Image (tube, rainbow, N blue to C red; front, side, top):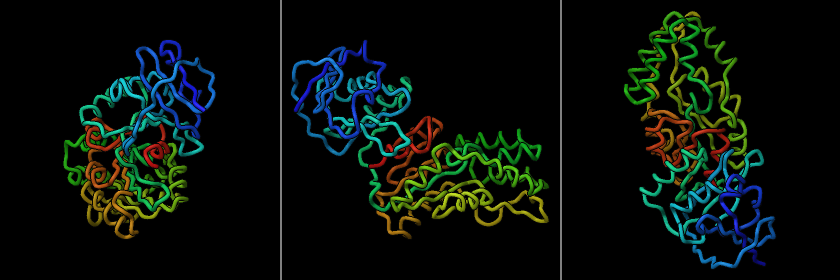
Length: 348
């Protein structure tokens, strides 16, 4: 059966599509002046209207909208840009029980870069997350996720916290900020920051580790991916003291980070061995994909800083997470707020 509904934007704009739709239904939505027209196979608690032609031939590209403020107005804003006079297939996509549904719009053809930029700007002001995905890694096939650690897998920058406890917080934070913005070469900035820690007690590291705040959604994300036979790793410009602990706690496939030199329980102010920098992080994608026979299109990376950009570009899907505008502009998708678990919205 077919039902056709009229959704006045002035009256229904603040309502979420999740009020009306379920994850089991495939619908069609069309912008019509100051209203949305909805074609459904289900009887809904909406005002009925005349039938309209639901002619749509979706391709592989999709738009997914999600977030606490998701509503019909956000859907209409997207339609205004991508298909102001066309009926567009849509559905609710809910990849995990702890996530609310996202609304997915199936596109008949890829979007131009100009349209993608307009959509990103539009949703940034509305407080709704929007991702445009030409192709998506598939959860049911072997895959790889490589995460940054500081401000991605965890909520802090470890070196800043160590520096605060060591009494050199301001000096180190200033260098960290410049490095994250891409104003300094990472290796040189790391050497300069670690040098400030000379003489600090190893006990400070234990103190930071004991209070290490995981990013919301991290544990659930890793558990879900591992259940789907995915490999999950961390590649960090931070320190093995913390990545090793996370590997053990979360059951990660591998971790890559820098080694703080410690002698007689004191930090020497030096890093041992080769520095894990932006290029190293990018190489981790290919190294692990080869080691675990993972197809290139099944690789995902997520991070927040300029040091993550090569890694994000090396993966089939590079995601900027709570990132600076410079990083968002160079990533294939961005999640600007909320939990890490939302990465599942970007997979199939």
